[in-house]
Length: 150
Length: 150
Image (cartoon, rainbow over all chains, first blue to last red):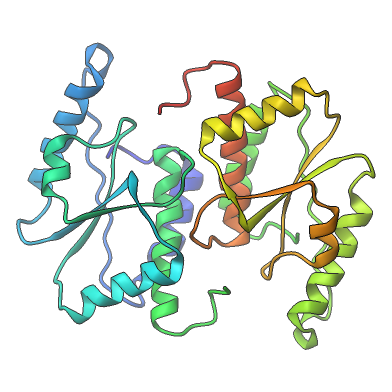
């Protein structure tokens, strides 16, 4: 949700995107920031963000939210989950990073599952970067490459 | 431990370092990479890294390891812990990011506590960046600034 503001976040995401593309078709979509946020409650903002998400996501895509209330996985279990989806021939797996206030009810209903990167709160800018690295790590694990040390 | 290789990590750390310095005296020290790693076991490498750390850290500094076996905190609890140290007039608080294989026994003995950023494994490069943001977040919480949303 929203533009990537920091150039260092963009650079980092680019690095891991490039690496990821050796393994799989991978795309990042940034939805435009909602306008008129200043006079908007967090609830209304989340609702509007949710509407944008739903419009963007294909009807048959499997949707996973990066959500602080989701379960926490370690990197190997996360890789296993991705692998399971590949074995089950899931065509499109969509990971969603929300806005500053998280997700609307519509988004929770649309989602197939949710997971949490950490008990700590990270900026939703930095989460994109962390997640890109984690996704690359997952594929390096699936492909038995030496990137990951336990 | 070791140089920061990625320019985007450097840039990100610089951003949060600058912000942190509005609140507190903050410094980052990078220890030189150990030479001859190729023919070295992980144990010997960790031992050598540990020796470098111990030499660098002041005898009366309080040392906290960023370690996957440490307890996981949320951002508010982490901020509380920092605040506690300030109230107790701890002069120097040292957070240590280890090398690729973690810490030696010497380091665990020297440490006052340890905590974990996530159940997931992040690259020890990216941990520096995540941690810098988290430390900045902690001070924004301590000072009641609007940066952090629960």
